[in-house]
Image: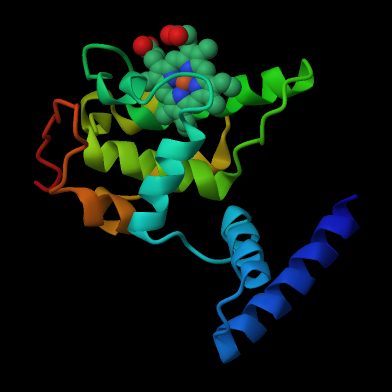
Length: 173
Ligand code: HEC
């Protein structure tokens, strides 16, 4: 199984490199690129990440859940993303027809809600956040990445999601 994943990864990588080299836009190419992004071989652009966040986080509840979420409501989005990923895995185990969240997706999606609705990670502190992330290495790495080094979040930091009350935190000292 592990070897299989590795081979698929390698094949995808080669195909993506080929598509990149000749730049042919076609539906199969788009699908392969989407898969490569899902697996983290290529990064999501900020626009793609926004579309992804709205699409992937509204399969169980409306976008209002994110838009009305706030610093008084609970822990920052990075922790919410982790819980939703875990919850989705649980639902899949129980037979639900959901697509599991990949690491690349939750990293991109967290940055989107942070950028468009608010990021109150500074109120919580990395140590508390790491505890709440329960060993989720991908999100722990994101938590330890300064906000200035998160490309999607930086691209969105002066935007606001319609219907939200954005919480601005001073992100740079
Ligand atoms: C598999 C279903 C499912 C998916 C997918 C899902 N959620 Fe949820 N979400 C829930 C459930 C269930 C609740 C809690 C019940 C409720 O409040 O309605 C919830 C609640 C929330 C809340 C409110 C938490 C609170 O304390 O008020 C937020 C914010 C949220 N989700 C964000 C997200 C984000 C961000 C994503 C995408 C990464 C996402 N959800 C994807 C099922 C899901």
